[in-house]
Each structure stands twice: as structure tokens, then as C-alpha cells.
Length: 483
Image (cartoon, rainbow, N blue to C red):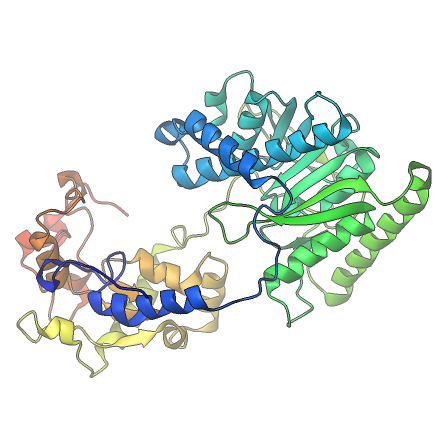
């Protein structure tokens, strides 16, 4: 039996997004909680932490979480510190327990060495080094946090290409922690590095050997199909392959592990031919499908430079045509880099369509006058307002049209897959009534830095008086203008 206890309606503040409405809690949330608790759904994947002792994991995780939690306070990256710190603590815990069990099985006390390919912020490498495992991380782009770890953490800025230049014959384990385009290559690199090399990979973005992975089985989820593909690569490389689910705050938390070989060392040449043939077949599929492999045909080297301006050019991959490492400069794909004129045109078109609708939002009418808040539209309906060239430009951005609309928070409210014109009277009234609000008011320097869209474009102007609006009512009202 589920029950919900909340504040009385007059004390319950809601913006309909981060703070849900009471009606949503009891009409939507409670029925879903009840259904989830009662239904027996068979997962496509194994149960969480099925390959290691859960009790050992729990004890070690709490120790490491306490040991490294201070990193959250000094995290210099733009990414969410709590998510990334505690996720990498959880992954490190899993590996440390897995490796501890392996040492027990082999009757050795020597800690395993590792190389983390595409190590990103390097925190996983930092923890593993700190816990006594020799190894290093490699990534095409140095992160700001690397300098904070100290000399005991070994990180290299390098463009990794699957080739004979990137084999690790003396390394025990290769790691792919959300390694993107390197993911399917990690079992191959491990297999070709040495007969004793093992690997651990967490597939995230869907890549094949020479480009984006192309779906072939609609009966499976895309994620499950990709996990099966990486498992197939591992098996073809000759590994005994195992799969497990990590205890991390991510929807993509399946790891694939190649611990031992299914063939004798004397059969290496035969298995290597099978690997090569398999990769060639995958490459042929790309050629046949006409998918661009983005290979630079006019150069033997891909130029990259480190932060000191030194050239770190990398030979074009000699294992397959078409592989290309990610760009050194990370591309911004959250619609923030789109041309201002383009964004303004999309915003104006969508807003005019909403204002032209005759339905009236009951929430806005309660504010006391007939200021037009228009109607609402599904995101899928808004798509039909735009031409193909606009849609193609948005398709290249993460989240596409929905991200653009959410970025323009001044004009739109996006809720439950629908788009509304934002009524700032309602927002202002709600915020002023929240006496116990934990949110700090915006700093004075952040007010009046951009023009008020409603003052300029709404047929009835802005519903707020100039002194009550956070945005500038005209050029003369601007302070420290922003883009």
C-alpha cells in the first residue's frame, strides 16, 4: 500500500517542472510507483554486480567514497561533480574487487597493471594509481583537473588509433570507461597486445570499427543490440566474455569483461586471421551501405597539438580504413553555438504559432487580465513548423529542437513533451510567496543584461512593469549586455 504525505495545498509551491504539482503526484507518480513495485519485468541484462562479492564491494565503496569525496568541492570541470566523482568511485571499486578476486584465484599478491584508453577526466586512473595499481590513462585532450592529481597519477595526452603503434604487451588490463569510438577496438587491442592481456569496457556511445554503429535488429533495443555486438567482437577475438551491470547513476551501466582466452597460445595465428577477416567484413558493410567513414585520404598523419603547441601527429590507422579519433577540441552541441539569427527566427516562428492558438491556459487567466499566453503544442507538432534546412541544423545538436526551446527559457516553458509561452507573472508571484525558498535570488549583475523578448515581440508587450522584469525593456534599460 502506497500513501503520499505532502504539505497542505496553500503551502505547496510548484513550477510544474523541478517542483511537480500535487495533482501530478497523486494521479501520475503514485500509480507508477505501485505498478513498478508489483510488476515482474524480465531484464535484458544480468542482475547488478553478479560477477563479484557484493558485500566486499559495499564495504570498499563506502571507504573510497569517504576517501575521495573532497574532490566534489574542488571539481574544475563543467560536468556535474557528484555524478562523475561517485560514478568513477563505483567503477574503481568494481575493478579493485574484481582484480582482488583474480589475484586470489591465481595465488599472487602482485597488483595488476592497466591502461585506460580514452580516460577523460582521469579520475578513475587517479583512484587506481592511488590504490596501488601501476598504470596510466590516455586521452586526446588534456582536462583541467589533470593538474590537480599530482605526480602519482599518470596521464598522457595522445590521439589513440587502433594500430601497431598502440599495443600494450606488458599491460595486464585495458580499460574503456565510456570510450566512445574506441569501444569495439578495445577487445581487439587487448587480444593483439599479448596472450595474457585482459580488458574491461563500458559501452556507451554506439560506434562500429570505422564509424557510427548501424542498427540491424529492430526486435532488440538499440542498447542491447550494441552490447551484443561488442560481445560478438570479444568472442571473435578469442576471449571468454562475461557481462555485468554496474551500480552507477547511468542508464548505460553494462560492462563487458574479457578475462581469459578460448584458444591455446599456439593457435594465435589462426585466431588472428579470424579477427582480421571479421574486421574486414564489418568494414565492407560500411562500404556497401554508403556510410561516410570520414577518413582523410590526402594525409598520412592527423595533426593534433598539445597545450604547449607540440605536434602529436598520429599515423593513420593501419588496421582498418575509416577510423577517426574524436576531435581534440570538443564540439559544443547544445544549440549554444548556433547562429543568433537562426535561433531568433526559430523562437519567433514557434512563439507566433503558440500565440495564434485560440485555447486559453486556465493558469494564466487566473493572473487577472487578458494578456495572451496562447496555447500549447507537442514537440512533434512544433517540428512541422520548421523547414528541412532548419531541422537538419538542429539534428546535429544534442537534444535538437527541444534543447533550443529549453535554452530559450525566457520565452518558453517545456513540460511533459509540450511547449507553452512562459507567463512571468505566475513565476514572479510564485517565487515571492516562497518565504522558505532555498534558491538564492539572482545577483544584481545578472538582471537587465538581455532584452525582454515579450517587450519587443509580443503583441501586448511584456506583462510585467519594467521595474519588475528581470529583462531590459529597450536598449536604454540594458546593463552589461550579453549575447
